[in-house]
Image (cartoon, rainbow, N blue to C red; front, side):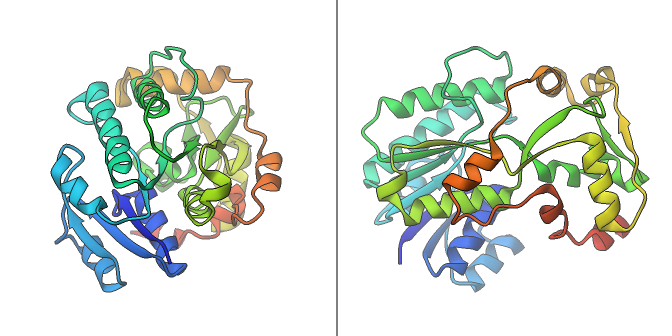
Length: 290
């Protein structure tokens, strides 16, 4: 059994990692902002040890990491402090793992090992963190997730609640996507096999589908006719800001896709999900009728 500190254990990625670690019988220290929250107390009821604190509290994070074998962590974009706040968070995670002499599994973003200014802050900040990580004496595995499949569950953006699937990309444009279930699968695999994964950096994608394909899959799984509608990028810029609009513009122009088949072949122990397999894990009746 491995003792693992999970940073952000009540978030999407951290929550999925915590769930899988507990399922595998590992000891989990769940680092959470609000230990009294219902999600945190539910984790405690399942056997997780709660540790309260933020990613700005070096002392609290250090206490939480005391005696652990591994740390799963990620920095949080879109905070009030912007890019510099996320960089500070990432550096603190690295420093904490180094001081604890723990195996760090850091969730970054695809391509953040490249030193190329993308002018997209939440990607560029992770480039800075990864550069810092490479200069430290820490055993680490870096994961580079692509666009989250779970973003479609944001009904205000995807408009699934209105009976359509909306996205800024052209209907036939493929988009690499990853589910947090597969991020968790790869993270736990790395934690359980540090001899194989320390020093590795792995870009993660679960599937690559077009908007039309995603709409067809969701129609089949939900039993509802869900057409695809391309959202004007100007509308995205107005609703979500320049950073998100610019991100989707890069996706529209992208020709460099993750080799999903090769990734699955290299790590067959991970229970990978296609878009359709992921869709079948969602309670769509509850989501769309709530």
